[in-house]
Structure formats: structure tokens, C-alpha cells
Image (cartoon, rainbow, N blue to C red; front, top):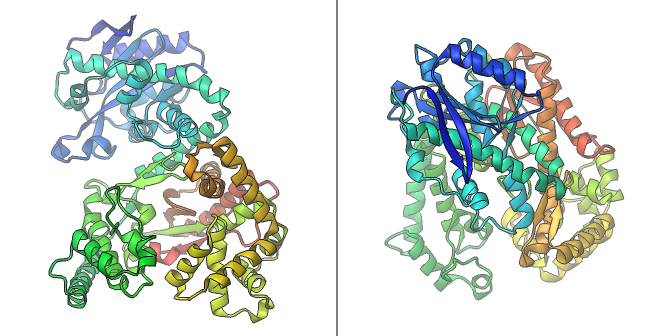
Length: 617
């Protein structure tokens, strides 16, 4: 396609777009834009990427800023679109930071909106452009959907689906598979790219007033700022020591083989499949457990590792539980983990999704670091590059602290303020003994109570949790007495929970401490009323900590490389580790105090320094 001015359409609106292939022309166009528009102007923004030549056959290349190059940068001003062909602007076809000086000041001066902006931020990171004020139309939509609908059923968040849903404009799927690496682009390719920048700005203009009207803008702004941290975490990645990991995997495979043989001998099953396991359990489980065992939509017993872990205390289930645990370990976190090692960086770059969970937590995939087993063998394999160390810090009992702050429970807050072990305090209260006389078993039961009752755990649930986690048998009357004693000890918590459940049942919605709004299904009000503010509040403490950390660097050369639940991990040169650890602790305390200005911070955090993830966890 030849450079020049062309026309496209948004519904009935005629919009001109320029295909720019000259560096001189690009400089002229950007100069005109800078003179014409104020610095608070919001431009529609998108990029198209092409794999580097040596990674053309690598399936994930288009998604990785380490394996691809920006082919097009599209900017929609509100009047027209400029499509910059970066291959044409750079004769060597391999963009480097020095090549984009004409774009750097532009991107670091104005405001932009992109769809799934984390992707575009990472592409700009690769060019040395990092200080970009960018909104995300996908995050805007997710916040609104979570507030309006109880589930994501029927909702897809891609730019094409969003455009169709909001404007009834169908985007051809054929256009999404363009080969952006070809020397000469077609008219259809360039027009498709131009329209993406238009769509994203139109979506932004439509959703922004709704966010503000529904009192969701404050939380959305938190999500917006988090994009930069997520982009950094994904861009930096974590180093996995391949040889050490393979050594551990070989051992897991051997253990799995032995577990399967043992299981077949014990059960007399000739094949171990989900079907044969389900059939065996139907025949051998006691009726009381069959009645409460989770089932599929077709009525069959569920046989995933999560279900087996919940019932692993049963003699009939224990062998299956061990087998399933080993199978998940070898399949999800064995050799499969190696395929995520980036061929350019030799590191794993997981994908984190802000608004990934309705409680407010983010989700993780490719691979899911948040489901990474706590096995020392796995975490030993994650090591920093030579000369560096890991610095890690997590919150102590963060969810219990959050419910204490939200409910203003005097006894729970008092225990935290004095630096006492809350499980021991709870054990003394529910067992009616002094704290110095609490036994190990009493503390274990108290731990089940603390982490169960804050989410509305019932008597049966307490019995199952005590048996599953600690092998402790509780009778129903014991469980009832324990729950009553817990309510008496933490009356503020019990009162807050009742108020939350009542509000949720009446309004079918609940908010997190920072303001995320979640629509609730009628059959999920009770649990979600307690779960969402607590889990959401814990996540918000971490999010605010990450933003504080980003602003407290003071030029220190550390990278934020991982954030799993309530743990933040940095990588930095060894001689800067003590300073980085101090900054990390301060940032996490500041994040907590931002959410709870009068919050108790005694014993809240303690950073660790080590040569592997296992050493700092």
C-alpha cells in the first residue's frame, strides 16, 4: 500500500486516516498534533506487532515484546487516524530505543487509551518508552460488567467483541490473523489497524461517564495505575534453572508411577481414568460423603485434584488424592513449565490479569504462578541471575488483619497490636484455657476457625477442614460449641458479618474497601458478602503497596518480578539487597496504611533475602 490519506467509516461517520512510511513525514505529523492538542487530550492508541525473523515459527512471538517488533503504531486524534509503519521508518527493520526519539516525548506528554493496554505498554517498554499515561477500555468494561452482572456469562472482552456489543459493528475475524511481518502491507491491513484506534477511543468515550456515574472511577484509576507494575512484572519475568528443575521432575514422574501402581493394586482397577475413579467412589464412599461430594452438570462425581484435596482425609479417598496431586504436579508444573521459558530472555514471563477475579484479586496464566505448589523442590529452581538475589516480603495474616480492620473487632485488633499469635489467642478463647496452656491441637483447630469462620464456614465445614488439614476429629456438638465461642470472642466480627450478609441479600451487591463493586447472584450472597471485602481488601493492600514501591525506588536498580497473592518479590544486585528490603517493607506498610489509615502494623511485614524463591518464601 502506498503512503497517503485514505478514508474509513465508523457507522455513518467518515474518518480520514494517514498511512505514514517516512520519518520526515512522521516528525511533521507529530509536530502538528503537539501544536494543535492540549496535553490533557486523550488519543486512541493501538499497536500491531510482527515476530522477529528468527522467531517466525514461535507461536507466542506475537505476544512477547522480547520476540517481536512493533510494525504499526496507530493514533486516533478524534478527527482522524495516523498509522505509522515502523518498519518503513527504520531502515534496519529492528527498532531500538534510539530509533523512536520522535515518539518518546509525544507518548510521555499526552494521555492515551488502549484496549488491554498492558500489552501495548510492554511493546513501548521494549523501545525505552515507559512513562505513558494510558487508560484501558478493557479494564473499564470489566469493572462495569462486574458491577452489573453476577457472572461473566455471555461476555467476551476482546476489542472485536466489545465493539460489536457496544456499537453493533462486526469486526472480521480474518483481519485478526494478518501477517504483519510482510514487507508491503495491504489496504485492508492498514484500514483494520486504523479502525482499532478509532474503536478504542469510542469505547472509552462511551464508558467513562458510566464509570463515574456508578461511583466506580476511583477503583478504575487504581487498576489503571497498576498496569505499569503488571507490565514491568511481565516484561522482566522470573528465571527458572532448567537443569535443576528437570532433576526434580524426574523424581516426580517416578513417584507418580509408583503411586499409580499402588492405587491399581489397592483398588483392583485395571485402568485409572476419571470414569473408573468416579465409578469406584460411587460404590465405596459412605452415603454422607456421596451426598456432599461436588458433581458435574451431568451428575457425575467430580474427580479433579481440588476436590480430592478437600476429601483427602477419608481412607477411601487418600490414595486417589496422592495420585491426583502427583499427576497435577507432573503435568502442570513438570516439563510443561519449561515450555514457558522465553527463548530470548531464558526467563518465564507469566501473564497477570487485573480484574481477573470478581473479589478484586488478579489472576495469572501462562503459567499460573498463583497456583504454584509450595514445594521447596519447585521453588528452589527459581533463581536470580548471577550477582543478583531475590528480595521477598509478604503480609502476615493479611486476611485476618483486613477483617479485623473492617469489623473494628476490639479483641482481634488488640491481639495484633500486642504482636500476639492470633491462632493461640483464638485457641484460648474457644477452648476456655489460658493462652500459655494452649495445646498444639487446640491451636490447629483455632487456625481452621480463623481462616474458615471469616468466610462464613459452617459446622460441617469446620469438621471437614479440621480432619483434612490436621487429622483432627470433631463431633457436631463440639463444632457448634466452638463456633459459638468464636462468635463470643470476636463479637465485632460476628456483628459485621451479619450486617454484610443482610446488606448483600437486600441489594445483591457488595463493595471492597477501595470501592470495587461486585454484583451478586441470589444464591451466592452469604458467602460473597464476607469473602469479597476481605479478599478484595487484602488484594488492594498489595496493589497499593506495588504503587508505593514503584514511586519509592529512588534510582535503586531492583526489578519487580513477581506478585503471588500477598507476596511481592524483587530481583536486585546483592550489594543493594538490604536497601531494597527496607524499601519493600516500607512500601507494604504504606500500602496497608493507605487502605486503613489507622491500621495496626505491628508484625505486619518482614522482608527476606535469598538466592532462590525457596529461600525467601
